[in-house]
Length: 306
Image 1 (cartoon, rainbow, N blue to C red):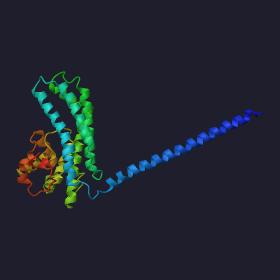
Image 2: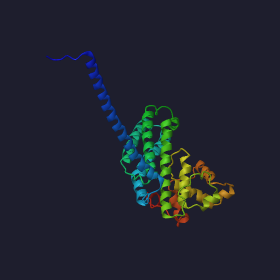
Image 3: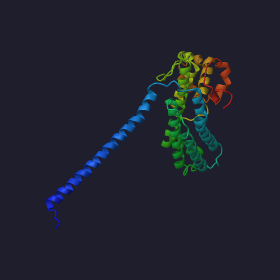
Image 4: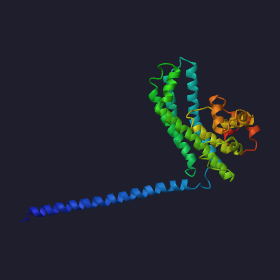
């Protein structure tokens, strides 16, 4: 005859089973936590190594050229479309601003997808940062323009532009775009340091450069200083840092800085920008005359092609 379990035996059996389940669960949880931590360490350690000291094959000219064609140009094509649209709105009151913004939002998304698919070697972290900043910029442009499109036809073109300029998404998009440009020109300075050990690779802190010091700087350093300056202006422009640097050099060489008693690069840049004296491709106009002996990476926007 079967022996029935009494109440205490049943409770003991259930308690034992419960402890067994808890022990097994704790074991597998511990294994998972340990695995996750190990994987996190494997991910973070290479990143630290990449930023700790530049690798011998970092910031190669071919990397700068590839970035120009695959990332920089993609972003600039979007930016040029936007600047062209702004000008058209101001000159043509019949423009369908809503349709334009919707199309620009789609273009920003397409450019984002294109740039996202580009491989940038992590051994060049500043170039990688430029890619990330351009992607963030395009994503914010896409979201901002899509949200603003519904009401942008109301009022005047200038009122519409003022509303866009004040939009938080747009402001952040500007910041990331200019930081992307700053990082790209910073990568060129890293390239120059590898080519010429006398080139300083880091000019952070040179927020106010005297004209005396500016004249002594190699061109590649002037370009980085100009990109740093432009990143603080929060404005999209057709001209690039080398156009600004060239216009500053021409202004100083003409004696206008001495005549006006201007003492710093920043003050000259402020004057030139406020009077809209800097134009796209100005660098190419004066390159042979002012910079024949200067060494630059062989990028299209430094030469006759673009």
